[in-house]
Length: 438
Image 1: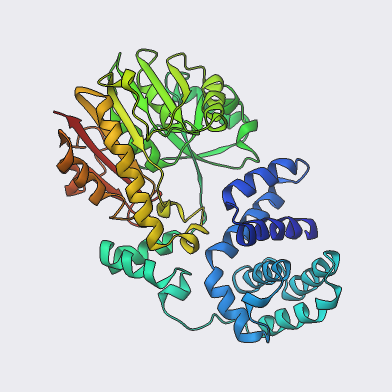
Image 2: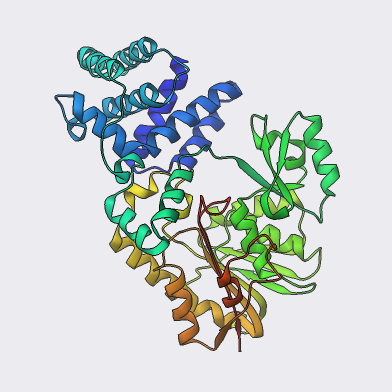
């Protein structure tokens, strides 16, 4: 257990002190820890994710009992105390004395023997009084006040609170079936043979939540390309595009390729999907997934979505523009985003999205369809940008009714717009909009 705590603390330090991304750090670090069993992997993930989810609350608790403010602590000690405080306040599977003792041992192991007494004293004070610090919803949900105010104004107080509560719930791994590669029953039987438990996705989507496995890349169905890891909201975006047999489809910002694979799968071996991204490294990830799934109608290319390519003008029946965004809809599994994003960054991202959209529509054939989507909950990046798109270019909205599952009943579907909100919808926060070239 000591080694798992050290691993978790190392990841936290990389995320909080060096600007790393928690999901990437967890994937890379646990990928190297090949001898770590499934239970320990889950423990590391819970420690890292939980500490990041509750960061502002944990800091408030530490500041209430420590003579040294959190901001003045040494980075390793700060990460160690935050992680240990999360255990004391929110986890009950390890006794408090063991949490304190292990933290002291880790401090000494990392060369901070002189701070053993400080670490022990702070944590024992918290163990004696594990009550949560008093404060408003911004403290309880650990979200900056300006961001909470914006969500309450844009979504309404109830939906904003539901969103934040959902972001604290443990995540589940969703996968989509590649239906042109294997029948659903064959995929389920393969998973059952490996003792993997499945639960249907909402809205009757073709896939499942998976439980009871260690690593998805060791599953037979994954290795054979029969399934793709993909969030429910992302699957819905692919359905919104609704490519028809023989269509030529462009995916502008495609890495790691989940939507591109979905588009190719919907074409059932016909047509072509051109999947692009900015760097060779990102494109290689798309190509890796293409090879695994065996889609011959998918081609990956390096391309800057901001730069117009004359040879593509009017050449595509569908354009998928799932663009770079603040990612606020994904704070349930990337919680550090809520502490890093700023109003200035939202302005900058909205400008970047408009820059790309002003190019993207030109690739459509007359009557061709553009799907603009993001993984955020931000009117500035979503509804306002879609309205700007319609006002500045020869495009008109297309209803999302009929292409999305009947279980989605939002009035905005008829206007070609859907804002998915965690807690209101059973998925990540996501924006989907649809229009066609006149």
